View 1 (cartoon, one colour):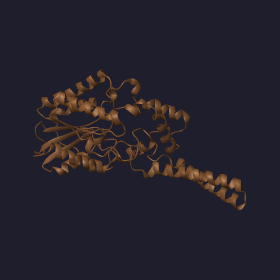
View 2 (cartoon, helix red, strand yellow; view 1 turned 180 degrees about the horizontal axis):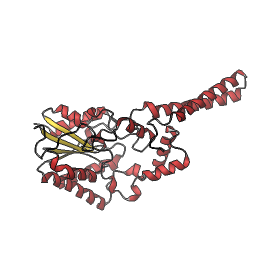
View 3 (cartoon, helix red, strand yellow; view 1 turned 120 degrees about the vertical axis):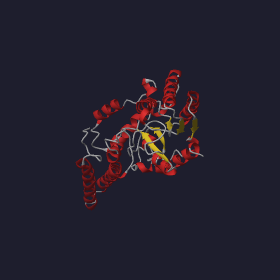
View 4 (cartoon, helix red, strand yellow; view 1 turned 90 degrees about the vertical axis):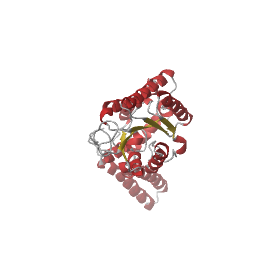
Length: 335
């Protein structure tokens, strides 16, 4: 689809749904007046179906102010275009910028905590970044300078790269890593990887994806129902995968140790994966402890996985961010 396409799609495509509904309603009324009951019933049924599709299109295009899936659907793209600036702050992440400083104290003179993570810390799905976990934690502890560093889809390797590149100027007195069970997804075997490019190309051969947000969503859901990535994308099944992930964890711990900054780890839930997700959390807990993280806590049992930005989306909503900030405060910032 063209990159220039508006967030809600082309207006002409949306108006086409209104045209179909209006036409069916007009023909149905004409048939009823002519007492052609069979035709009138058929047209009325078709009009009802078209009206449902119109409501779905309206909701997915304009009313649903959140990405509705962990997939590159048009609705997720619409939310991103409406709420995510192409250029973030000078450090490449969402939120207010901060001044570089040597390790040990922030540029303001306050103790600086770096909250490092992926979609959760970035607040993907939450329009107002001030209602996300980093800023909320900062408001709970005004004596601290809390900096949220998160990018959607970041894995542990990308977090390591960013931390290593910026460690000397972070001015951190502590790094608090918010770990999700999907942070090792890039280490899964190729057959379990999500090939977004192939999915998008297959979709485009069936229909023009820019025409219908409902069709786009149904396409992705039908393709993903039997996908091993969708069902088991958080598993650390192979020993090689576990060893590679543990090595990345160790390197993050070593980066923090090199600049004299303690590393704490909070493990948070990734909804919808059942036993696989719970097994991964248990493994991750042991792995982070083995590599030398100062304090590691699994917060998942105390968080409500149903507090999401939408039914099908895995990202926490504002209420979940507030709950997470409160738990982080209690577990890692106690006097």
